[in-house]
Amino acid sequence: MRTTVANSRQMHGGTSSFLHRRFMFNFNDLRAGFPWMKTLISLITLFSFASRGRCDVRVSVQETNGLFNLNYQCLAGETVRSFALDVTVDRGQIVAVTNFLRGPSTAAARGYGIFPASFRDNIIVSSGSNANWSVSSYSPVAVAADDPDGTLPGLNSSGVTVEFGALWDPVVPASIPTSSGTLCSLRITQTANVTVAANTSRGGIIAAPPELPITPVFVGALIGPAILSATVSNRVITVRFQDGELESAPSPNGPWTGTGNTSGVYTQQATAMPGSFYRVHNH
Image (tube, rainbow, N blue to C red):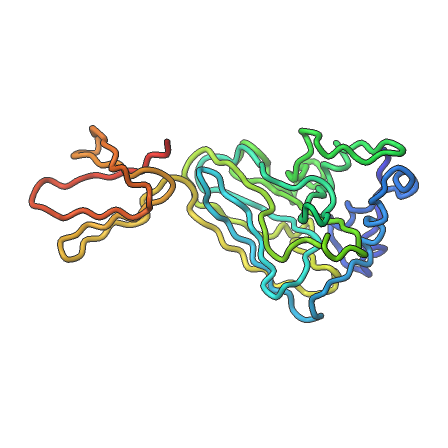
């Protein structure tokens, strides 16, 4: 399959974005054998049910069983066309990206499953058939070689750039991506503070239609087994923790004993006996 690069001004009336330019394909190659390609053509003139005011979009990190979800929320119910994001950790590495949609947004599966670089490199469109979206190498991870100065190193490093786009049939409102959801999940090697930000060289967050201004809000989080706080009040010790079972020991060297508590809050009566030490273990 051939791809072509179109100037972003042809697509969006002057909006400059690396991500935008990468959404343009050779229509003549695809129209006959790609039934939903009409939605790609309509991408240039996407519409939104939101009012033409400011778009407030929140992108946040949510811890879940050793992974973390990259979530989005359109606070005014507007529609986003694409996300280009940088995700970083302050310790360890990001080693996997999972739980993402593949292909166009449909009434049965709504969301952001078009990854420009990965589409170009991995998706084959055969004449008279749909694309095979199950290719294992199809991924939202951006290709660093396309824009070395504007792309994080990728998997097995402390930072990854991900890009998500949505295509849908404009005559089927039920296929428009939901106003909130999960873009993907990521796995890290150890407990870390995770931050997320717009990748400006790829356009950041783009509304549908793209001329609507976006006001993004990014919220990071501490991900992985961790003790969040320990306080003493009225001779009661309260330990708040996340992502595992709280264990205690009489010294930092152990022996460690499970408390059986995975709720995130543990209390114990303070005594005159030697202090206890705590850690969180993710089984």
